[in-house]
Amino acid sequence: MFRCIFHVDLDAFYVSVEVLHDPSLKGKPVIVGGHPDSRGVVAAASYEIRKYGVHSAMPLSQARRLCPQAVFVPVHFSRYIEASRAFMSLLESISPVIEPMGFDEAFLDVSGLVEDFDAANALASYIKKRVHDELGLIASVGVAPSKIVAKVASDHDKPDGLVVVRPGEEANFLAPLAIEKLPGIGKKTGESLHNIGIETLGQLAALPDDVLRGSFGRYGEVLRRHARGIDKSRVEARGEPKSMSRETTFETDTRDTEFLRLALRSMSEHLSRDLAKHMKQASTVTVKLRWEDFQTVNRQESLRTRTSSTRELYEAANRLLVHLVSSSNKRVRLIGLKVSNLSGPERQLDMFSPETARVQGLDRAISEIRGKYGDTAIRHLPRPRKGRTSLDRG
Image (cartoon, rainbow, N blue to C red):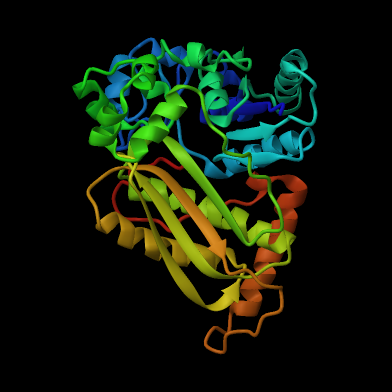
């Protein structure tokens, strides 16, 4: 059965979006993360600054020492989500089978759109051109018979790459690559593989069963299949929503709670709009964190009343974030927000919350204004705090 999967990934996403809003940044060594005098870290770095040794997770003060001429800009999550929505909408206009993965990447199943991999190559070029011409962004595309290989291929020739791995070429393509190139191999698994002398995916693919089981249990067989390019998982298309979620993987693992709150606030605003668009109310809020060691934790809260209010979603999310962050000293790699137990728009107002109707009306008005004039037409301003925070909000 013919199968062709695309992985489309936007290059240097945060930096690229900032350049769209300020074209004078183009070609300059740009750091997204905040003011260099703050205690924050580099959230994203342009390709121009990486030659100075600046990389994600580096303290902003150290980045400035390495590149004094760097341009520092604050994080603007609302801009990134707005760009992400346009990107996903473009992809959905090409293929009905799309699986978003965070803000800036998605899988597409184009098996029913192309007859062979030559046609797939042409379609991938077309997508790249549309992303550039319509969104002003640069995309790298991996084309392969499986999701795992397409994902590796999209990262193989960044930036502005297009790599096609044809059926039967998967194992040879993966074999010389470092084991860290395979999704799912994090720091801990990588160290375990290095300890038994495994450096490349070809070596991993050739490991005997007893070594795999002894070191990794049942997960070892999954690793070996993926190292050989074998992956039968499907691209999961969007359907009638039973839940709605937003998540993003940071280029920098972080413990900066203000940074994390800013991400949750922006996600809450967009989920509120998504709920309104689908005429839904949510009864449950879940916050997901993935730690630096790739362990994923979730915490959820059942709301007293169903809601689509930005404020109520954010307040619940913030409470959950406090519990999760206080439970561990590890840094956060990914943050996500999900609303579930969805129902129709009818709602009995909470008798203990007399401002509910006013808040709902405000949310609708904000949503209409942003829908017409863009996400930056109205922005949330945090309450002033005493002392310096670790983010410069501009």
